[in-house]
Length: 134
Image 1 (tube, helix red, strand yellow):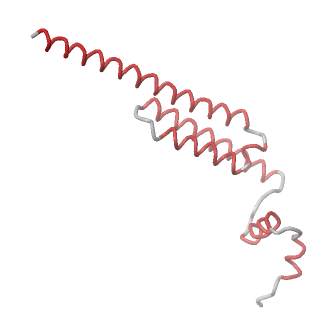
Image 2 (cartoon, helix red, strand yellow; image 1 turned 120 degrees about the vertical axis):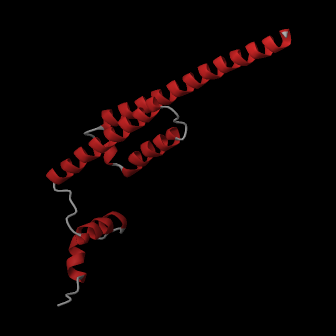
Image 3 (cartoon, one colour; image 1 turned 90 degrees about the horizontal axis):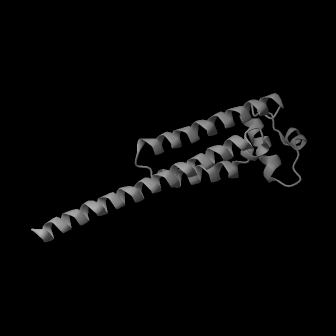
């Protein structure tokens, strides 16, 4: 009976140890989410979050963190990050509307993409090469 009691006590001790490690890991996950939230809030209003690569980096990190989420508190941190990102991007979109950086039509989008990726191409060239369909 003594060996059984010891093995039972050892198992209980191992469970407590596992729970402690799990709690510490979950705390680290929440801390990382908080860091991303602070980064997003600090960059809100700056051009850094307008950079698609920065946004992708934050979302990629959040997706990797979410793979380890098991408890509601971590889900809440994930939700808070996504809300912060959404609010930041909404504010950025509104700023762009106010400064005239908007894409109203498909033509505006294509023109913007050409300006970005075709060296030496200007919007004036589009009116020269435009073909009337009427």
